[in-house]
Length: 84
Image 1: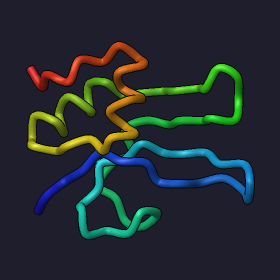
Image 2: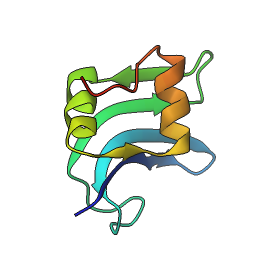
Image 3: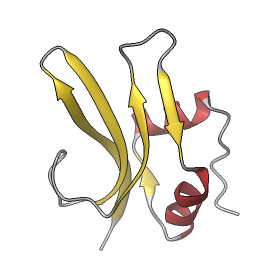
């Protein structure tokens, strides 16, 4: 089972809110996920980002790869991509 850390869309039409989740690559975007590891709200200024860094490090240590968008969110928060 290959795992990705990606965004799962929530919220209403034209008002997106995202969960940052660890999910199997074969699961649909808004479908089943293994664990929610944070949230991202792009509608407020500045964007509200809440991360559970301990769990993100755990999943990256287990081999999960973040998507490009999640990588940029992590970088904005000063999160190092090293799993150690």
